[in-house]
Length: 312
Length: 204
Image 1: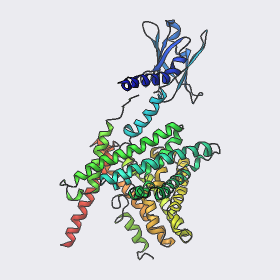
Image 2 (image 1 turned 90 degrees about the horizontal axis):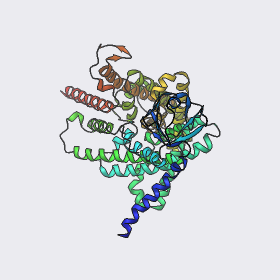
Image 3 (image 1 turned 30 degrees about the vertical axis):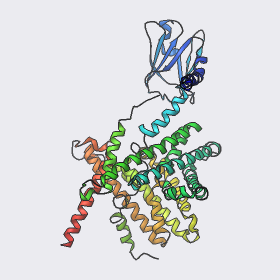
């Protein structure tokens, strides 16, 4: 009983700690701020403000924290009837994953504040996005050779998926270090492909050697899949994506985990269907790979249903 | 061990008997992902042809100096070098087409077809044979991509290479991204059917 009551308390403390930066920032004129829909930022003032001044878009300057040079254009500002809540509407959709900085200018007192989603939620949304919404197999069409090759049996699917996830996470983290601390400072961006694929080969070789010595049983189970990992487009796509988006360490980890987990998920579901299909009466010319493609197409259609899902 | 096929036979077998997409079922990602128009298929085909031919030639030239234990990393790095070359060239001279193909040009490095040809063919054969084998495989890939692109563009938009042929759009579904799976599956089934019919007719 004691333990059961402890858990909500611990959770409450955790949430409080996570919210602390948000609470500390809310001082001065501003009581609260958040993203509305894709085109909106909603600002709440502590007291009612002057209707005439605060609906003028010229008094607001907004930019993404990472690009202070690029000002985002406002199309309109609306105040509600109490005069305390202003909705800023933008001409183009905002990248709500990034932190935005809003400044109130040309007023007696200038005010600057940050609008961002809670960081933990943002990290989890990267994970869920890579896992379901932008599943690499069914919505980005990557890694299909290995996908169709190893989804005949569920055991194989599990082995391949787990091996792939491990190699994916390790190599993505290595790629991130290399990109941030070697390639970017020395301007070697154009060597991305060579360096990333080299790191993947290195990881595969290292996992192979270590596993062989440390755990021969596991090696016998998973060793055969290691070679296949390198022929999978996803393994090279993830480093390229993280270099393109300038992800930080935690974001990289989440993306790699999501990519690996998504591949495992896709592979396992596909294998379950294909094991049943062995017994089904499929037209002769469609036996094997062609019918697998059509099943994959149906999965892809089902995964379209995840688009627009936002949990956090 | 030298192959007994002539150069022409090598090219033709790459296009027909050993077609990378429909017969070897390798490098399916672009076949599903960006085969919405004939032009896309053609452009990626050119890139793959380039990488395949030059990697085959490089490996064939240096095959005697590669230690068997490090041959796979050697292949990978060779391919990566040539992919970097074509990636930079396309980005510089054909930025529009490059933007359409997106990440797929860079992903040529992970296409199983190229590594497989190096392992099965180029590391054993002479330079000339490897060159023609590379040309055959590259053309085979290009032909496969263009065939899928043709079906999807014709059925989805009613056009070929951007020219209006049918005057109406039969099934818009075919240019949607998901239709790639269905289209490839149906075409494979169709080709298998033709093959069995052909064999039956031959036997009597």
